[in-house]
Image (cartoon, rainbow over all chains, first blue to last red):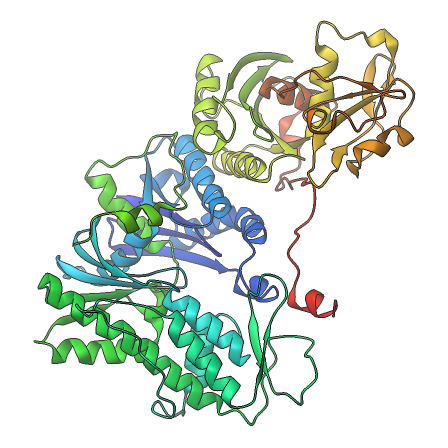
Length: 370
Length: 239
């Protein structure tokens, strides 16, 4: 069965054709990163316009790349939660129109569940149950997964998402956006032990996750070095440190004074963020007595996180470790089409009046935890 | 062009879909209330086609209100229309909101064409401004005389003829601000119907004898304002 997946929940437009939830025939992704970098963060309005302009050409591209016709598609799967409301609507409206025009079923997919499915797309042998660690710019959630659409929350960040923390620290250091790749790149050759950033409280069961303290610690470290921290106008989306003798910068994303040991700070920060995630993950596996871990989401592309998490799992009773492949960590449509296939098989077909659920995540937060 | 037009209206609180054939609205299905386009637009389209007894691929043209209007509503309508056009291999045409509003207004039973009054359809653009355009009487019909413009309601009369009629969803929020000595302000409720978008499209395509000759391009939305967010460079320039 051939499923077309559509993903527009945030700032990436993605389309993919996947056969039987496993075989990727074609995938296309148009990142808006460069566009939003000009604004220092995602502008929902701009994201919507770009999704609208990019989506159909991408559908055309995956058809051409795979040698398939629109009429070969057996179902259309689309992300309808959670995400930016306008962005979700562009994808859902297009998916509905496509399904209707082709006379094929529509399947709506939860973006977070799809991220977890990305590991299964890569590894058909991977079995349930497993502990799923979803780490991205918008989420830092740990679930116990017992099926493609069955996930019970074990713990989640109390404040910032891990990826958000990377973005903020990267902005602070003036090393660019998005923060994940920027920090990873800057940390190369840096001393991970140079600065002992705090790892925060683990809580009585070791499950507590928080990243705002780490961000503040980086901020304080820069202050100690004599840097001026300027809260920026416009909602303070970007805060950048500035050496006291330097003039007010024209662009906040310029590189800081060379006096700053950027590599050491980035490496030390990254190590702390990784430690926080690994600590909570191991605690989660102990709590639900599960011996398999799946790491997914944009931050799962971080090499150091993959490395440390793999070693830590192995050291803890040889717990199995599976990371989503690098190309399926960031937002993509392969995972949407893949999970869409499973929902189709179990008959979870959406009706034409399906709606978006931008804040579904908040409801889940209140839900019973495992 | 005398073919079948599927029209989509999602720029305001209401809207839905309509099917027009041979210049007549054959079916019209509306959403149940405000902010329902996201879920209900596609079912409206489905039912409008069913009511008009046409199949998915039978329409010759897809017409969509391209604004100005609600950002989210327009986005839903445009994404739906563009995708239908792509999947069914049909041209998509954008119908400017004010053209459809004027058509609906002058077709009402109690409208007296013979008074030949100037028409100013208005929409609430927020921030104490309305968006509008001037339509003039021209040999039995009303034709657009200006592009879409943002105007403070209290100064609209400066550009309008005496006794020009101001109507539309932008009247109620600013009813006290229009100069009523100069303008005829119609405070009646006004909700644009999908059938009016279909009729406006029919008129827009009057000179085209074959739908195949319509240019295939992505319809661009006409928003009230451009993006309000500023780039880092723009913000730095404000120091």
